[in-house]
Amino acid sequence: MTAHALAAPAADATALPVIDLSELNDPQRHADFHARLARIARDTGFFYLEGHGIDTGLIRRVEQLTRAVFALPASAKERIAIRNTPHFRGYTGVGGELTRLQPDLREQLDLGEEQPAVAPAPGQPAWWSLQGPNQWPEELPELRGAILQWLDATRGVAERLLHAFLTALGQPPHALDGLIAAPRNHRLKIIHYPGQPDGQSSQGVGAHKDGGLLTLLLTDDVGGLQVHTEQGWIDVPPRRDAFVINIGEMLELATNGYLRANVHRVVSPRPGVDRYSIAYFFSPSLHAQEIPLLALPAELARKARGPESDPLNPLFRHIGTNALKGRLRSHLDVAERFYPEQFAQLQAQAAAQGKALEASAY
Ligand SMILES: O=C(O)CCC(=O)C(=O)O
Ligand SMILES: [Fe+2]
Image (cartoon, protein in one colour):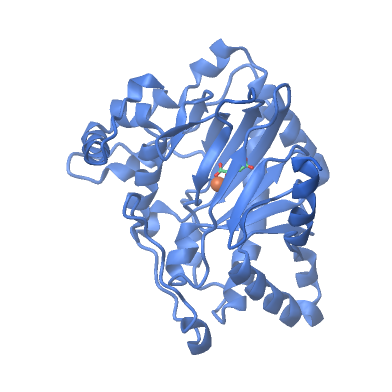
């Protein structure tokens, strides 16, 4: 029996649940919907979302533009490099981003809500520089409109889902609206995973948790996404036009660990195969400052495990501090160029772990 045949039954046995958001259109189904959401969110944290109502025409258009971005000549992509600005928006080439100091074998374009740059005055916190304008490739003028439309559409879905989560946890649905009001800090990453030769690294993106509240991920039909569960790594097979939802660290903090952010990763496709994905990170506004702690009903509060904090990658309640930490660790070239103080701290931490940090190597 081949390794592939052995793997197949395990993947079926652990198939991820599907939630249909359109059930919320029928008040008679609300109670069942919320009960199921509460159970799934706590058990697996990863699920597919259908019935989200986003027009398939818009999905196809954004998918097609994603491919068009990565098909641009290298010189066009370099012109919008992420290292051009301190805002963590722009293009990163294969191996240019790190997860736990290992290069991710993907290229990506980081985008977000169009906002003017805030240049922090001396003494003001550096994380204000996370806010700023996007860099758009001039060769694809239609990208801007389509992406801004996508950000709006996915945000609408993410808001409904967050409200549903809060209801499921016995909270007023709008309990966290202060975190998601404008000016927003939601982010989008369009990603290309090129196939990798056998016998070399297959880290498309290394094991990580997402930093925001919720992530809505759209993938093409090439697999590779895996989630870590009590049974080990399980495949998250593609499901056409459904979002893969995962819980981010900020929702873990707000629920005192009742909800857990999932560890996930992407294994590179085989040589000659390309995988594309579009990840929307529904993240709290920098202006909201701190993540509040929700007062969960007693029976849920008893089951809250406390947030999980990794000593090598501590989690902060302060939104800007936590967001900047994550971005600096992933993009050392931006850190070295625009955040020299923080870069020196990262170098000192790495040295204490016996590792060298060389931004210029990437
Ligand atoms: O591309 C994917 O399927 C997942 C991407 C991801 O987990 C991330 O960028 O945080
Ligand atoms: Fe992720």
